[in-house]
Image 1: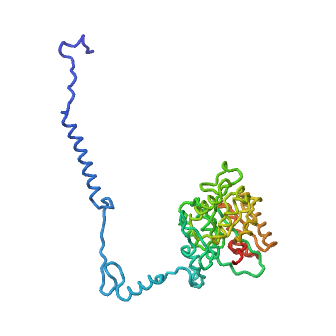
Image 2 (image 1 turned 90 degrees about the vertical axis):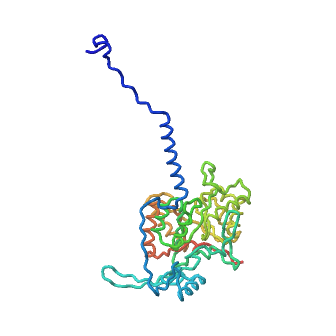
Image 3 (image 1 turned 60 degrees about the vertical axis):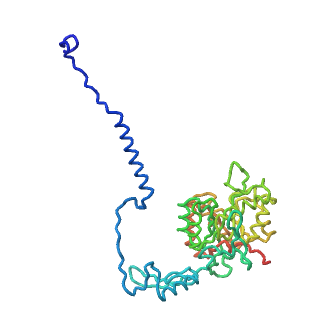
Length: 394
């Protein structure tokens, strides 16, 4: 055992001296790192390399003599003149169409090879393309609808043609509301429901222009949902810019214009909540006067028995419709089927009926199944404008 008592004097193990770097080495290391960062920042600022140094390969395209193209890809000779004429006339290149003319589509059976030609009827420019600029007015919030100088109303310009059906056959319009707030539910409704069903979009939706464009391309009539004050407000708040009974008429009309500017191409508006607001003639009447003034229809969702929408719309010559059945008030498959049955009964009794539902998956599923069989029972499915009360001609 080696310790201070047993080891010979002077032979104790001595600790090795620690390596000490000169102070200048630390400064040199820090300076080198700073120089590297400075060079990297300079390279990022002056070098144009959007691919970040990734490997690239360039392939040349051989131009054959007489191919009729210029280096920029612009057609030369007669082709250039034709292209300019097409651009000036707003025409589509060969093989493309804006949907305004009937098109013949050839369907080939993959099993038997049998060919069948089907004529697809075109849509009007207002239905197929962007909203008509003649039906738009600029407000402080952006574009809002108006009646054209020729008297054309947006509710007529953006209406879907009424399907051909036997005279006196019961008619049913279905409206799905709440689209635009959920990408999954909105996509589900657009992919599963036929164009004859009217779609109501929330003003708070994300990517609203994208969804509106897809819905219009599918042939749907559109309505705008406008949040209105419910009885339990503010505990139950529909959202920003809600129309309120505590505001004066000009303030509510200004808020209405804000909602109207969210997107274009709709045939009318409908209430989102609004039990208290639609029961107040003082607050509600200026809104329906503005709706009529802009050539839109108003759809009452039928949720509040105290709503004055019908009598105010009639007094102001506004196009009007009211939902007869909330189809998914009880959101189960059996209850929705029962509600659809009640809707058919109302249509047979009165000649027409309107049903409204949300974008719940079960609602979309049951309505999509019902649509496939309803015409076999002697009922015609129509867009909302086909069953709305029309305003009198001025």
